[in-house]
Image (tube, rainbow, N blue to C red; front, side, top):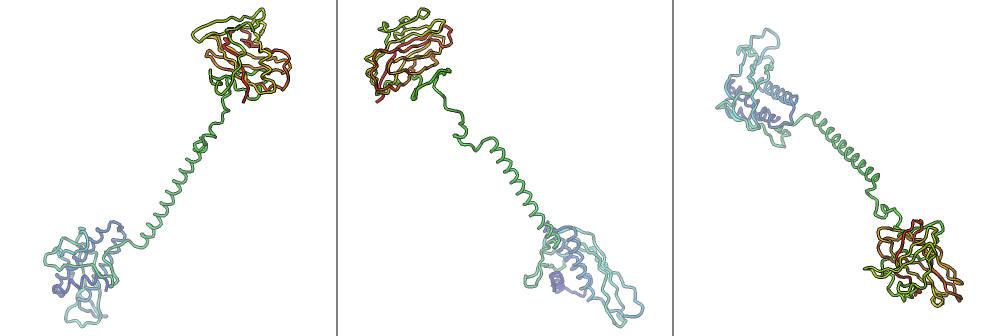
Length: 381
């Protein structure tokens, strides 16, 4: 016995089941209970609701046939009076939310009591829609225990569950593919724009060279450090003075060049200006100084600046007699006082004579001047 039949028969036990009007109220209560159950489940489609309603209609037809008299197999059938479900309201059924529906007539052929029963004819029960609750009708409980093999919850049919089951995986697959595509595009642009490059990869420019200007004939010696701030090369060195503005007697200037001792708030300096021929001003390096440097690695330091408002490029040449030279050096000299360093490895020889350091104040031959504060040398420890 399924849940619908059990609920109806339980309701019959609460009244006179032989009374057609009572049975009618029970049937309407059953339909009302079904509608409340259907509306309580929002997932139920219209097609499923129609199927459930047809099922309860068939069950009511089967139950109602038990209360109709039998009719003979052969012979004329009497006209069956119509059994019309009245406009009374059905009793409440505790299974869900109420849904209004039109009243339906239940027609069933009824045979005279004098006729001999031969067979039974099922009544015609149209789709009964519930009215409001009928007072005095027994309550119908459409629920059934799990052991009875029936449940009152009206679930969507198998086809609908199968469609929903297919729809969810497809949605998940679409979202997953979209997300993966977005991540892939983001990674591609990140690689193209260099987001993942390290600082070492980004800093591909060569290190800044010291502010020196190299000409075709410029061959700096190994270890030449270029300009340095004043005093930067003083640490742990024993400097030997080569030139000081206080003694300009060891400076030689050609006829078209000038060398003049001057002084300002930075101290005394020798302002040299090379001539149009590009001749250089020579600074003597005493033989005694060269004897101290023979066989050693020496570092020369020229402390200089350019004339105010006129940056220049100076070139430096050396002649140390038997000890060789220093190669040609070229430096960009600014308006701030700086130290311009170069080193010379001396052979272990006797110099035999003094040497010279020649400085051209303007390599471009535009008549610019350079201020020489000091020239000194030290031996590498």
